Amino acid sequence: MASKATETYEIDPVHSSIGFKVKHLFSWVQGRFDTVEGAITLDENNPEASSVKVNIKAESINTANAKRDGHLKSADFFEVDKHPLLSFASKSVKRTGETTADVIGDLTMHGVTKEVPLKVEFLGKGPGMQGETQAGFQATTTLKRSDFGLTWGKMIEGTPLVGDEVQVNLEVVGIRKPQETAKP
Image 1 (tube, one colour):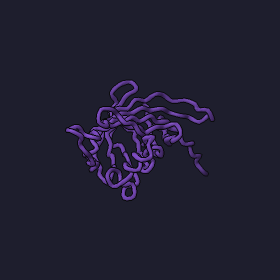
Image 2: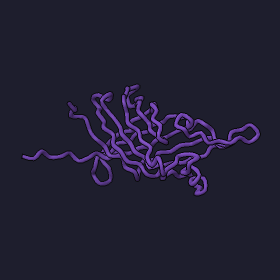
Image 3: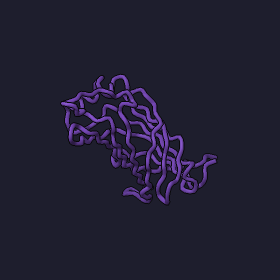
Image 4: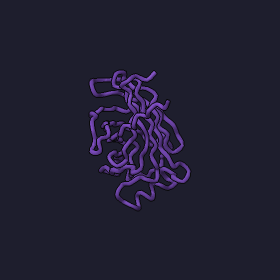
């Protein structure tokens, strides 16, 4: 049974960012996914009962370079025509501090599902500009793209053109769903 402190927040795509960076030769290339939807169920009295589900449109990848984005959408990387969504569904939440938690969940990307840990910080909640309740979260993780079958790569004189490790940074704002009124 859900406690009174359990609240469900829809991810606000306008104020949320799913960002990443990956090594490209001797520097970092940053990017993001522009289309995200999902929900966070937050139980402040029992954080371990909280959960999150997210869907990200693979075709919304944006590295501020149309040619590179086209390559990332191709069969060399995300194959967006075959694998249109990246999804994450939490399996467990473990509180690690007053406002922090480790969230373990299944990430499905490029048709491969792997367990991924997120380091999450709850940034707070309160009224938004329209009087709705908002909550903010930040999460980070590091993935190996090869774990998800994203293995395209070239070497230039022994240096990989694209690194295998991808640093992921999520800045998420959730808007609380209105409470349904019981009908007589």
